[in-house]
Amino acid sequence: VNEYKENQNIAYVSLRPVETTVLIKTAKVYLAPFSLSNYQLDQLMCPKSLLEKNSNNEVACKKTKIKKTCRRIIPPKMKTTSSKSESTLQNSASAVHTESNKLQPKRTADAMNLSVDVESSQDGDSDEDITPGLDDFSGLSPYERKRLKNISENADFFASLQLSEVCVESVFKTKIKKPKRENGVGCRRSMRLLKVDPSGVSLPATPTPPTLVADETPLLPPGPLEMTSENQEDNERFKGFLHTWAGMKKPSSKNTEKGLSSIKSYRANLNGMVISEDTVYKVTTGPIFSMALHPSETRTLVAVGAKFGQVGLCDLTQQPKEDGVYVFHPHSQPVSCLYFSPANPAHILSLSYDGTLRCGDFSRAIFEEVYRNERNSFSSFDFLSEDASTLIVGHWDGNMSLVDRRTPGTSYEKLTSSSMGKIRTVHVHPVHRQYFITAGLRDTHIYDARQLKSRGSQPLISLTEHTKSIASAYFSPLTGNRVVTTCADCNLRIFDSSCVSSKIPLLTTIRHNTFTGRWLTRFQAMWDPKQEDCVIVGSMAHPRRVEIFHETGKRVHSFGGECLVSVCSINAMHPTRYILAGGNSSGKIHVFMNEKSC
Image (tube, rainbow, N blue to C red; front, side, top):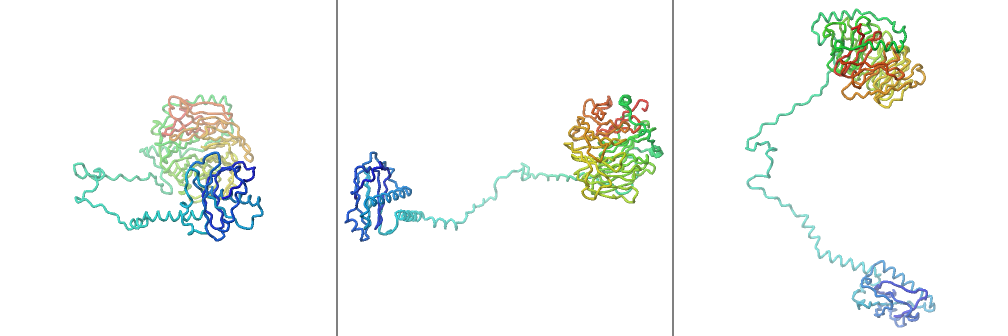
């Protein structure tokens, strides 16, 4: 083994020792940390005899012990050889070989085989013990030899485990069933689940719970219904009541010619209105959803629509007061809208959720069917003409129907769909009757009845100032120059509708608690027919009251008293007289009127 001294610029090399066997013309280099300062370059040249031996394709393995000259001692752990370090050392060996060829270019004729065996100073293990049977793997690299050796060792190891025989036995192995008990008694079970008394006596069978039937009120039969009172058995008194109201004449229209009163005189008249026990009536059994006052100037008649399809009439001029209340049942679901006919005072029209619109005729004592649509649920209606011959009906699903009472049958003339998801109220302009306003979820729209289409009718104007659902929207009763809306965001809004063809500006926002909850009927702010710049609305404040606001937002008057102990959600004012009626959610009406009229 020749040793050489490399370039003086390389001061120190520190590498782990790696054992490698070189066959035939492959150089095998074992490198160990050592200093090159103690060796000369000519000592690395292989002798000629060694080259001649390798030319016969025989393995030349000579052992030479090279003492380490590095200053530090190699620990035992560095003897372990890894694939990564082996490749690094081979690259280093090739670099050394290249450098030696550069130093001596004359010796390039013969191939040089280096066999350098490094033996650690700590143990004297020889190379022959590590690489047995080299002739069997002639021509393979050290890595491939090591790989084949590992494969052979692993195969021998797995063969000794006999895994294949164990797998075959586990596949054909059958499950062993547990033997049944001879006495036939299984696991212990609960006597309650077996429905057995602890004493061993069988318990009686559990009664089957009754099946719950949906509470669906069937629709009343189509056609006219007889006007029969549910709470009055005296037919003679009832016939007298019908005869009295059938003879009522159409009221005069002097109120429209008088114009508006001053706020001072209006407030003075309101202060004279009082309530007493004699003006509190129990009319229906359920909450009141709608209310109307007969326009008669001589007698006082209040009509209410209730939750369970009832229509109640209360004659305040008849004594005792229990004899003046008459309840009818023309519908099967809530009556949400109620009007006395402007053309015939002996007619009262009622609309219900059940998809029917009926006209109660006092002269004939029947409820005639005007419009019927069992597939849709109605919410509100109003008169498009002053003679009450044509109607506009709003549906809960956002559709609208035009109904002509002069045509035979109970169908519509035109059914149109709107852009609103729901319609709660419909109200016609008092002067320009082709316009009507609808209140829905969050929008209030004004339509022209002449431009309605069967699909996708677009509104003329939309009021988008509301943030929550809208309970109602009404034009002012005399001129229609104002619109009042009641919204669930606890605000009453008043708009200027004097010019319907353009945008309607917002005039006033009145802060008012409209959160009635689940069990109370929603508030609906209504205009006073005598004073169209004032609105009437119920209140949640204590003590209970009914309030009147001016269009500027100022409170004009508050109705209250010891007899008013509940919330009046629905209110109506007489068109010519100072009479106010409020209905609550228990079927009672509270009437405020002048002491002279009582």
